[in-house]
Length: 502
Image (cartoon, rainbow, N blue to C red; front, side, top):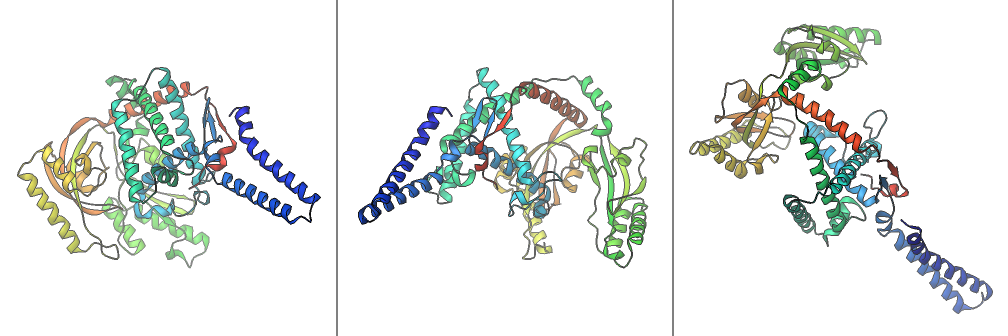
Protein backbone atom coordinates (compact mmCIF):
# COMPACT_ATOMS: atom_id res chain seq x y z
CA UNK A 1 0.00 0.00 0.00
CA UNK A 2 1.43 3.43 -0.96
CA UNK A 3 2.29 6.12 1.57
CA UNK A 4 -0.42 8.39 0.19
CA UNK A 5 -3.03 5.67 0.65
CA UNK A 6 -1.83 5.05 4.18
CA UNK A 7 -2.11 8.77 4.89
CA UNK A 8 -5.65 8.86 3.58
CA UNK A 9 -6.54 5.96 5.82
CA UNK A 10 -4.92 7.51 8.86
CA UNK A 11 -6.28 11.07 8.58
CA UNK A 12 -9.90 10.33 9.56
CA UNK A 13 -8.76 8.61 12.73
CA UNK A 14 -6.33 11.42 13.61
CA UNK A 15 -9.01 13.98 12.96
CA UNK A 16 -11.29 12.17 15.39
CA UNK A 17 -8.62 12.10 18.08
CA UNK A 18 -7.92 15.83 17.62
CA UNK A 19 -11.57 16.60 18.11
CA UNK A 20 -11.66 14.55 21.27
CA UNK A 21 -8.53 16.20 22.65
CA UNK A 22 -9.90 19.62 21.84
CA UNK A 23 -13.19 18.78 23.49
CA UNK A 24 -11.44 17.50 26.58
CA UNK A 25 -9.31 20.62 26.78
CA UNK A 26 -12.39 22.76 26.49
CA UNK A 27 -14.08 20.75 29.22
CA UNK A 28 -11.10 21.27 31.51
CA UNK A 29 -11.34 25.04 31.05
CA UNK A 30 -15.05 25.12 31.79
CA UNK A 31 -15.61 22.08 33.94
CA UNK A 32 -18.64 23.64 35.59
CA UNK A 33 -20.50 23.93 32.32
CA UNK A 34 -23.01 21.11 32.08
CA UNK A 35 -23.51 21.82 28.37
CA UNK A 36 -19.79 21.34 27.63
CA UNK A 37 -19.71 18.14 29.69
CA UNK A 38 -22.55 16.74 27.65
CA UNK A 39 -20.81 17.66 24.38
CA UNK A 40 -17.58 16.03 25.56
CA UNK A 41 -19.44 12.84 26.51
CA UNK A 42 -21.21 12.69 23.17
CA UNK A 43 -18.01 13.24 21.22
CA UNK A 44 -16.14 10.55 23.19
CA UNK A 45 -18.97 8.07 22.67
CA UNK A 46 -19.07 8.78 18.95
CA UNK A 47 -15.31 8.30 18.63
CA UNK A 48 -15.45 4.99 20.51
CA UNK A 49 -18.33 3.78 18.35
CA UNK A 50 -16.43 4.71 15.21
CA UNK A 51 -13.30 2.92 16.45
CA UNK A 52 -15.28 -0.21 17.34
CA UNK A 53 -16.95 -0.24 13.93
CA UNK A 54 -13.57 0.15 12.26
CA UNK A 55 -12.04 -2.69 14.25
CA UNK A 56 -14.94 -5.05 13.47
CA UNK A 57 -15.10 -4.14 9.77
CA UNK A 58 -13.50 -6.05 6.90
CA UNK A 59 -10.69 -3.51 6.59
CA UNK A 60 -7.93 -5.55 8.21
CA UNK A 61 -8.97 -8.66 6.27
CA UNK A 62 -8.93 -7.00 2.86
CA UNK A 63 -6.50 -4.08 3.06
CA UNK A 64 -3.57 -5.48 5.04
CA UNK A 65 -0.86 -7.79 3.77
CA UNK A 66 -0.88 -11.33 5.06
CA UNK A 67 1.68 -12.68 2.59
CA UNK A 68 3.64 -11.31 -0.34
CA UNK A 69 4.80 -13.84 -2.92
CA UNK A 70 7.14 -12.39 -5.48
CA UNK A 71 5.55 -9.07 -6.37
CA UNK A 72 1.99 -10.18 -5.56
CA UNK A 73 0.41 -9.11 -2.29
CA UNK A 74 -2.30 -11.24 -0.70
CA UNK A 75 -4.73 -10.10 1.96
CA UNK A 76 -5.81 -12.28 4.90
CA UNK A 77 -9.13 -12.93 3.12
CA UNK A 78 -7.28 -14.24 0.06
CA UNK A 79 -4.96 -16.44 2.12
CA UNK A 80 -7.99 -17.76 4.02
CA UNK A 81 -9.38 -18.99 0.68
CA UNK A 82 -6.36 -21.26 0.24
CA UNK A 83 -6.15 -22.15 3.93
CA UNK A 84 -9.75 -23.32 3.97
CA UNK A 85 -9.27 -25.18 0.67
CA UNK A 86 -6.22 -26.99 2.02
CA UNK A 87 -8.05 -27.88 5.22
CA UNK A 88 -10.91 -29.39 3.20
CA UNK A 89 -8.50 -31.46 1.11
CA UNK A 90 -6.71 -32.75 4.21
CA UNK A 91 -9.99 -33.57 5.93
CA UNK A 92 -11.42 -35.44 2.91
CA UNK A 93 -8.20 -37.40 2.40
CA UNK A 94 -8.00 -38.45 6.04
CA UNK A 95 -11.68 -39.30 6.20
CA UNK A 96 -11.35 -41.55 3.16
CA UNK A 97 -8.52 -43.37 4.97
CA UNK A 98 -9.85 -43.53 8.52
CA UNK A 99 -13.62 -43.05 8.22
CA UNK A 100 -15.27 -43.12 11.63
CA UNK A 101 -11.86 -43.40 13.30
CA UNK A 102 -10.75 -40.00 11.97
CA UNK A 103 -10.73 -38.34 15.40
CA UNK A 104 -7.88 -40.63 16.45
CA UNK A 105 -5.49 -38.73 14.16
CA UNK A 106 -7.36 -35.50 13.38
CA UNK A 107 -10.27 -34.13 15.42
CA UNK A 108 -12.34 -31.64 13.38
CA UNK A 109 -14.10 -30.55 16.58
CA UNK A 110 -10.90 -29.42 18.27
CA UNK A 111 -8.72 -26.38 17.37
CA UNK A 112 -5.98 -27.42 14.96
CA UNK A 113 -3.39 -25.53 17.02
CA UNK A 114 -4.04 -27.97 19.87
CA UNK A 115 -3.36 -31.08 17.78
CA UNK A 116 0.08 -32.32 16.75
CA UNK A 117 0.70 -33.25 13.12
CA UNK A 118 4.14 -34.55 14.02
CA UNK A 119 6.90 -33.82 16.56
CA UNK A 120 7.60 -30.39 15.07
CA UNK A 121 4.25 -29.03 13.87
CA UNK A 122 0.64 -28.72 14.90
CA UNK A 123 -2.05 -29.45 12.35
CA UNK A 124 -2.67 -25.69 12.10
CA UNK A 125 0.98 -25.08 11.19
CA UNK A 126 1.07 -27.96 8.73
CA UNK A 127 -2.09 -26.85 6.92
CA UNK A 128 -0.93 -23.22 6.85
CA UNK A 129 2.43 -24.18 5.32
CA UNK A 130 0.68 -26.39 2.75
CA UNK A 131 -1.74 -23.57 1.89
CA UNK A 132 1.10 -21.09 1.38
CA UNK A 133 2.96 -23.60 -0.79
CA UNK A 134 -0.18 -23.98 -2.89
CA UNK A 135 -0.63 -20.22 -3.10
CA UNK A 136 2.98 -19.83 -4.20
CA UNK A 137 2.49 -22.46 -6.89
CA UNK A 138 -0.64 -20.71 -8.16
CA UNK A 139 1.19 -17.36 -8.17
CA UNK A 140 4.18 -18.67 -10.10
CA UNK A 141 2.12 -20.50 -12.73
CA UNK A 142 -0.39 -17.66 -13.07
CA UNK A 143 2.38 -15.13 -13.70
CA UNK A 144 3.97 -17.37 -16.32
CA UNK A 145 0.59 -18.12 -17.91
CA UNK A 146 -0.36 -14.46 -18.24
CA UNK A 147 3.06 -13.66 -19.68
CA UNK A 148 2.43 -16.31 -22.34
CA UNK A 149 -1.05 -15.06 -23.16
CA UNK A 150 -3.21 -17.62 -21.34
CA UNK A 151 -6.88 -16.78 -20.85
CA UNK A 152 -9.83 -18.65 -19.41
CA UNK A 153 -11.18 -21.28 -21.78
CA UNK A 154 -14.90 -21.70 -22.37
CA UNK A 155 -14.74 -24.80 -20.19
CA UNK A 156 -13.10 -22.83 -17.38
CA UNK A 157 -15.68 -20.07 -17.65
CA UNK A 158 -18.42 -22.68 -17.40
CA UNK A 159 -16.69 -24.11 -14.30
CA UNK A 160 -16.69 -20.65 -12.70
CA UNK A 161 -20.41 -20.25 -13.38
CA UNK A 162 -21.12 -23.70 -12.00
CA UNK A 163 -19.21 -22.87 -8.82
CA UNK A 164 -21.10 -19.62 -8.41
CA UNK A 165 -24.41 -21.39 -8.93
CA UNK A 166 -23.45 -23.93 -6.26
CA UNK A 167 -22.48 -21.18 -3.82
CA UNK A 168 -25.78 -19.36 -4.40
CA UNK A 169 -27.60 -22.61 -3.78
CA UNK A 170 -25.70 -23.23 -0.52
CA UNK A 171 -26.36 -19.66 0.61
CA UNK A 172 -30.08 -20.05 -0.05
CA UNK A 173 -30.28 -23.44 1.65
CA UNK A 174 -28.50 -22.02 4.68
CA UNK A 175 -30.78 -18.97 4.79
CA UNK A 176 -27.90 -16.55 4.38
CA UNK A 177 -28.98 -13.01 3.44
CA UNK A 178 -26.56 -12.96 0.49
CA UNK A 179 -23.89 -14.94 -1.27
CA UNK A 180 -21.26 -12.62 0.24
CA UNK A 181 -22.52 -13.50 3.71
CA UNK A 182 -22.19 -17.21 2.98
CA UNK A 183 -18.68 -16.80 1.54
CA UNK A 184 -17.61 -14.77 4.58
CA UNK A 185 -19.03 -17.41 6.90
CA UNK A 186 -17.17 -20.19 5.11
CA UNK A 187 -13.85 -18.53 4.20
CA UNK A 188 -13.69 -15.79 6.82
CA UNK A 189 -14.14 -12.04 6.97
CA UNK A 190 -13.48 -10.09 3.82
CA UNK A 191 -14.40 -12.84 1.39
CA UNK A 192 -17.02 -11.83 -1.15
CA UNK A 193 -18.12 -12.80 -4.64
CA UNK A 194 -15.63 -10.55 -6.39
CA UNK A 195 -12.65 -11.93 -4.48
CA UNK A 196 -13.93 -15.49 -4.74
CA UNK A 197 -14.28 -15.27 -8.53
CA UNK A 198 -10.89 -13.59 -8.89
CA UNK A 199 -9.10 -16.35 -6.97
CA UNK A 200 -11.04 -19.10 -8.72
CA UNK A 201 -10.15 -17.72 -12.16
CA UNK A 202 -6.53 -17.24 -11.14
CA UNK A 203 -6.34 -20.82 -9.89
CA UNK A 204 -7.87 -22.20 -13.10
CA UNK A 205 -5.43 -20.32 -15.32
CA UNK A 206 -2.53 -21.49 -13.15
CA UNK A 207 -3.85 -25.07 -13.30
CA UNK A 208 -3.93 -24.94 -17.10
CA UNK A 209 -0.30 -23.87 -17.19
CA UNK A 210 0.59 -26.60 -14.70
CA UNK A 211 -1.24 -29.27 -16.71
CA UNK A 212 0.49 -28.23 -19.91
CA UNK A 213 3.86 -28.29 -18.17
CA UNK A 214 3.18 -31.81 -16.89
CA UNK A 215 2.09 -33.00 -20.34
CA UNK A 216 5.20 -31.57 -21.98
CA UNK A 217 7.39 -34.39 -20.63
CA UNK A 218 7.50 -37.57 -22.73
CA UNK A 219 9.28 -40.89 -22.20
CA UNK A 220 10.02 -43.91 -24.33
CA UNK A 221 9.14 -47.46 -23.35
CA UNK A 222 12.84 -48.21 -22.85
CA UNK A 223 13.23 -45.23 -20.54
CA UNK A 224 10.29 -46.39 -18.44
CA UNK A 225 11.60 -49.93 -18.18
CA UNK A 226 15.09 -48.77 -17.30
CA UNK A 227 13.83 -46.42 -14.59
CA UNK A 228 11.66 -49.10 -12.99
CA UNK A 229 14.49 -51.65 -13.03
CA UNK A 230 16.82 -49.15 -11.37
CA UNK A 231 14.29 -48.27 -8.67
CA UNK A 232 12.48 -51.60 -8.30
CA UNK A 233 13.18 -51.89 -4.57
CA UNK A 234 11.23 -48.68 -3.97
CA UNK A 235 8.51 -49.25 -6.58
CA UNK A 236 7.63 -52.93 -6.14
CA UNK A 237 4.62 -53.78 -4.01
CA UNK A 238 5.37 -55.90 -0.98
CA UNK A 239 2.77 -58.24 0.46
CA UNK A 240 3.20 -59.23 4.08
CA UNK A 241 1.49 -59.66 7.44
CA UNK A 242 2.46 -57.59 10.45
CA UNK A 243 1.19 -57.47 14.00
CA UNK A 244 2.66 -55.52 16.90
CA UNK A 245 2.54 -57.04 20.36
CA UNK A 246 2.78 -54.30 22.99
CA UNK A 247 4.62 -54.75 26.24
CA UNK A 248 1.66 -52.91 27.84
CA UNK A 249 -0.78 -55.64 26.82
CA UNK A 250 -3.18 -56.72 29.57
CA UNK A 251 -1.81 -60.25 29.23
CA UNK A 252 1.51 -59.06 30.70
CA UNK A 253 0.08 -56.81 33.41
CA UNK A 254 1.47 -58.79 36.34
CA UNK A 255 5.05 -58.90 34.97
CA UNK A 256 7.96 -56.56 35.55
CA UNK A 257 9.35 -54.54 32.64
CA UNK A 258 12.01 -57.06 31.65
CA UNK A 259 9.56 -59.95 31.77
CA UNK A 260 7.01 -57.93 29.78
CA UNK A 261 9.50 -57.37 26.97
CA UNK A 262 10.41 -61.07 26.93
CA UNK A 263 6.76 -62.12 26.95
CA UNK A 264 5.87 -59.73 24.12
CA UNK A 265 8.77 -61.05 22.04
CA UNK A 266 7.76 -64.66 22.67
CA UNK A 267 4.13 -63.96 21.74
CA UNK A 268 5.28 -62.26 18.53
CA UNK A 269 7.50 -65.23 17.70
CA UNK A 270 4.52 -67.58 17.99
CA UNK A 271 2.48 -65.39 15.64
CA UNK A 272 5.31 -64.90 13.13
CA UNK A 273 6.06 -68.64 12.95
CA UNK A 274 2.49 -69.44 11.88
CA UNK A 275 3.56 -70.03 8.27
CA UNK A 276 0.67 -68.55 6.25
CA UNK A 277 -1.90 -65.80 6.36
CA UNK A 278 -4.79 -67.80 7.80
CA UNK A 279 -2.59 -69.23 10.53
CA UNK A 280 -1.15 -65.77 11.23
CA UNK A 281 -4.63 -64.32 11.77
CA UNK A 282 -5.61 -67.30 13.90
CA UNK A 283 -2.52 -66.83 16.09
CA UNK A 284 -3.38 -63.15 16.55
CA UNK A 285 -6.95 -64.12 17.43
CA UNK A 286 -5.67 -66.54 20.06
CA UNK A 287 -3.45 -63.84 21.56
CA UNK A 288 -6.09 -61.10 21.74
CA UNK A 289 -8.93 -63.46 22.68
CA UNK A 290 -11.24 -62.46 19.85
CA UNK A 291 -11.45 -62.58 16.06
CA UNK A 292 -8.49 -60.86 14.42
CA UNK A 293 -8.95 -58.05 11.91
CA UNK A 294 -5.37 -58.36 10.64
CA UNK A 295 -5.14 -58.56 6.85
CA UNK A 296 -2.31 -58.68 4.37
CA UNK A 297 -0.49 -55.38 3.91
CA UNK A 298 0.17 -54.28 0.33
CA UNK A 299 2.52 -51.33 0.05
CA UNK A 300 5.58 -49.85 -1.59
CA UNK A 301 8.76 -49.29 0.40
CA UNK A 302 7.89 -45.68 1.23
CA UNK A 303 4.55 -46.79 2.59
CA UNK A 304 5.88 -48.98 5.38
CA UNK A 305 7.47 -48.33 8.74
CA UNK A 306 11.20 -47.76 8.91
CA UNK A 307 11.22 -50.27 11.75
CA UNK A 308 10.84 -53.21 9.38
CA UNK A 309 11.26 -51.72 5.88
CA UNK A 310 14.83 -52.97 5.46
CA UNK A 311 13.83 -56.54 6.32
CA UNK A 312 10.77 -56.58 4.05
CA UNK A 313 12.55 -55.05 1.03
CA UNK A 314 15.67 -57.19 1.28
CA UNK A 315 16.21 -58.70 -2.19
CA UNK A 316 16.88 -62.07 -0.56
CA UNK A 317 13.46 -62.18 1.07
CA UNK A 318 11.43 -65.32 0.20
CA UNK A 319 7.74 -66.26 0.66
CA UNK A 320 7.18 -67.68 4.13
CA UNK A 321 10.12 -65.86 5.73
CA UNK A 322 9.31 -64.57 9.20
CA UNK A 323 10.97 -62.62 11.97
CA UNK A 324 10.33 -60.54 15.08
CA UNK A 325 11.64 -56.99 15.43
CA UNK A 326 11.58 -55.25 18.82
CA UNK A 327 11.25 -51.47 18.85
CA UNK A 328 9.65 -48.74 20.97
CA UNK A 329 7.96 -51.07 23.43
CA UNK A 330 6.58 -53.30 20.68
CA UNK A 331 7.49 -56.68 19.26
CA UNK A 332 6.52 -56.82 15.59
CA UNK A 333 5.63 -60.22 14.17
CA UNK A 334 6.35 -60.25 10.43
CA UNK A 335 5.45 -62.85 7.81
CA UNK A 336 6.57 -62.22 4.24
CA UNK A 337 4.16 -63.34 1.53
CA UNK A 338 5.40 -62.09 -1.84
CA UNK A 339 6.62 -59.17 -3.90
CA UNK A 340 4.83 -57.85 -6.98
CA UNK A 341 6.83 -56.19 -9.77
CA UNK A 342 3.62 -54.52 -11.07
CA UNK A 343 3.98 -56.07 -14.51
CA UNK A 344 0.25 -56.22 -15.23
CA UNK A 345 -2.35 -54.02 -16.88
CA UNK A 346 -4.46 -51.63 -14.86
CA UNK A 347 -8.20 -51.82 -15.44
CA UNK A 348 -11.32 -49.68 -15.57
CA UNK A 349 -14.63 -50.58 -14.01
CA UNK A 350 -18.14 -49.26 -13.54
CA UNK A 351 -20.10 -50.20 -10.47
CA UNK A 352 -23.32 -49.66 -8.59
CA UNK A 353 -23.29 -49.73 -4.79
CA UNK A 354 -26.26 -50.51 -2.59
CA UNK A 355 -25.47 -50.02 1.09
CA UNK A 356 -26.83 -52.12 3.90
CA UNK A 357 -28.54 -50.15 6.66
CA UNK A 358 -26.91 -50.29 10.08
CA UNK A 359 -29.00 -50.66 13.23
CA UNK A 360 -28.94 -48.23 16.15
CA UNK A 361 -25.71 -49.86 17.39
CA UNK A 362 -23.96 -49.47 14.05
CA UNK A 363 -24.22 -53.20 13.36
CA UNK A 364 -25.47 -54.89 10.18
CA UNK A 365 -28.05 -57.58 10.75
CA UNK A 366 -28.48 -60.56 8.45
CA UNK A 367 -31.79 -59.04 7.35
CA UNK A 368 -30.15 -55.73 6.40
CA UNK A 369 -27.44 -57.50 4.41
CA UNK A 370 -30.02 -59.70 2.69
CA UNK A 371 -32.08 -56.64 1.74
CA UNK A 372 -29.06 -54.91 0.19
CA UNK A 373 -28.12 -58.05 -1.74
CA UNK A 374 -31.69 -58.53 -2.98
CA UNK A 375 -31.75 -54.94 -4.24
CA UNK A 376 -28.46 -55.28 -6.13
CA UNK A 377 -29.71 -58.53 -7.66
CA UNK A 378 -32.80 -56.66 -8.92
CA UNK A 379 -30.58 -54.03 -10.54
CA UNK A 380 -28.40 -56.80 -12.00
CA UNK A 381 -31.47 -58.36 -13.59
CA UNK A 382 -32.52 -54.98 -14.98
CA UNK A 383 -29.08 -54.50 -16.51
CA UNK A 384 -29.09 -57.98 -18.07
CA UNK A 385 -32.09 -56.94 -20.19
CA UNK A 386 -29.62 -54.64 -22.00
CA UNK A 387 -26.12 -55.72 -20.90
CA UNK A 388 -24.10 -52.78 -22.21
CA UNK A 389 -21.68 -50.42 -20.52
CA UNK A 390 -23.87 -47.42 -21.37
CA UNK A 391 -26.86 -49.07 -19.70
CA UNK A 392 -24.88 -49.83 -16.54
CA UNK A 393 -23.61 -46.22 -16.49
CA UNK A 394 -27.18 -44.97 -16.65
CA UNK A 395 -28.28 -47.33 -13.90
CA UNK A 396 -25.37 -46.14 -11.75
CA UNK A 397 -26.53 -42.53 -12.06
CA UNK A 398 -30.03 -43.67 -11.14
CA UNK A 399 -29.34 -46.13 -8.32
CA UNK A 400 -25.77 -46.11 -7.00
CA UNK A 401 -25.14 -44.97 -3.43
CA UNK A 402 -21.44 -44.33 -4.05
CA UNK A 403 -21.30 -40.54 -3.92
CA UNK A 404 -17.81 -40.51 -5.42
CA UNK A 405 -18.76 -42.11 -8.73
CA UNK A 406 -22.54 -42.24 -9.19
CA UNK A 407 -22.82 -39.10 -11.30
CA UNK A 408 -19.94 -40.31 -13.46
CA UNK A 409 -21.76 -43.51 -14.29
CA UNK A 410 -19.96 -45.46 -11.57
CA UNK A 411 -16.65 -45.19 -13.44
CA UNK A 412 -13.25 -45.82 -11.86
CA UNK A 413 -10.20 -45.83 -14.15
CA UNK A 414 -6.59 -47.04 -14.00
CA UNK A 415 -7.25 -49.32 -11.04
CA UNK A 416 -4.28 -51.22 -9.71
CA UNK A 417 -4.28 -54.36 -7.60
CA UNK A 418 -5.35 -54.36 -3.96
CA UNK A 419 -6.99 -50.93 -4.13
CA UNK A 420 -10.59 -52.12 -4.16
CA UNK A 421 -12.25 -54.33 -1.54
CA UNK A 422 -11.28 -58.00 -1.78
CA UNK A 423 -14.20 -59.35 -3.83
CA UNK A 424 -13.94 -56.58 -6.42
CA UNK A 425 -10.16 -56.95 -6.56
CA UNK A 426 -10.48 -60.70 -7.11
CA UNK A 427 -13.02 -60.22 -9.90
CA UNK A 428 -10.89 -57.64 -11.70
CA UNK A 429 -7.51 -59.35 -11.35
CA UNK A 430 -7.85 -62.98 -10.27
CA UNK A 431 -11.02 -64.38 -11.82
CA UNK A 432 -10.03 -64.29 -15.48
CA UNK A 433 -12.86 -61.83 -16.17
CA UNK A 434 -12.73 -59.92 -19.43
CA UNK A 435 -14.08 -56.54 -20.51
CA UNK A 436 -17.87 -56.59 -20.77
CA UNK A 437 -18.40 -59.09 -17.94
CA UNK A 438 -20.15 -58.24 -14.68
CA UNK A 439 -20.69 -59.73 -11.23
CA UNK A 440 -22.15 -59.02 -7.80
CA UNK A 441 -19.55 -58.44 -5.08
CA UNK A 442 -19.78 -57.86 -1.35
CA UNK A 443 -17.72 -55.06 0.14
CA UNK A 444 -17.12 -53.35 3.45
CA UNK A 445 -14.87 -50.58 4.69
CA UNK A 446 -14.80 -48.01 7.46
CA UNK A 447 -17.41 -46.03 5.51
CA UNK A 448 -19.90 -48.59 4.24
CA UNK A 449 -21.07 -52.19 4.10
CA UNK A 450 -23.03 -53.42 1.12
CA UNK A 451 -23.11 -54.98 -2.33
CA UNK A 452 -21.76 -53.89 -5.69
CA UNK A 453 -22.72 -54.65 -9.25
CA UNK A 454 -19.29 -54.55 -10.91
CA UNK A 455 -18.73 -54.20 -14.67
CA UNK A 456 -15.28 -54.83 -16.19
CA UNK A 457 -14.89 -51.78 -18.45
CA UNK A 458 -11.46 -52.39 -20.01
CA UNK A 459 -7.69 -52.57 -19.60
CA UNK A 460 -4.93 -49.99 -19.83
CA UNK A 461 -1.14 -50.14 -19.97
CA UNK A 462 1.25 -51.90 -17.60
CA UNK A 463 1.16 -50.62 -14.05
CA UNK A 464 4.95 -50.74 -13.76
CA UNK A 465 5.15 -48.29 -16.69
CA UNK A 466 2.52 -46.10 -15.05
CA UNK A 467 4.54 -45.95 -11.83
CA UNK A 468 7.80 -45.25 -13.64
CA UNK A 469 6.24 -42.53 -15.77
CA UNK A 470 4.62 -40.91 -12.74
CA UNK A 471 7.95 -40.86 -10.89
CA UNK A 472 9.86 -39.45 -13.86
CA UNK A 473 7.18 -36.88 -14.60
CA UNK A 474 7.05 -35.80 -10.96
CA UNK A 475 10.82 -35.33 -10.86
CA UNK A 476 10.85 -33.34 -14.10
CA UNK A 477 7.85 -31.28 -13.05
CA UNK A 478 9.42 -30.46 -9.68
CA UNK A 479 12.68 -29.42 -11.32
CA UNK A 480 10.84 -27.21 -13.82
CA UNK A 481 8.72 -25.61 -11.09
CA UNK A 482 11.74 -24.99 -8.87
CA UNK A 483 13.44 -23.19 -11.76
CA UNK A 484 10.35 -21.04 -12.41
CA UNK A 485 9.92 -20.25 -8.72
CA UNK A 486 13.58 -19.51 -7.98
CA UNK A 487 13.04 -15.74 -7.86
CA UNK A 488 9.82 -15.88 -5.81
CA UNK A 489 10.24 -15.22 -2.13
CA UNK A 490 7.48 -15.52 0.47
CA UNK A 491 7.28 -12.68 2.97
CA UNK A 492 4.72 -12.60 5.75
CA UNK A 493 3.05 -9.31 6.60
CA UNK A 494 1.34 -7.85 9.62
CA UNK A 495 -2.01 -9.12 8.33
CA UNK A 496 -1.04 -12.72 8.95
CA UNK A 497 -2.67 -12.54 12.39
CA UNK A 498 -6.05 -12.09 10.70
CA UNK A 499 -5.89 -15.46 8.98
CA UNK A 500 -8.79 -17.40 10.49
CA UNK A 501 -7.58 -20.49 12.31
CA UNK A 502 -9.86 -23.50 12.01
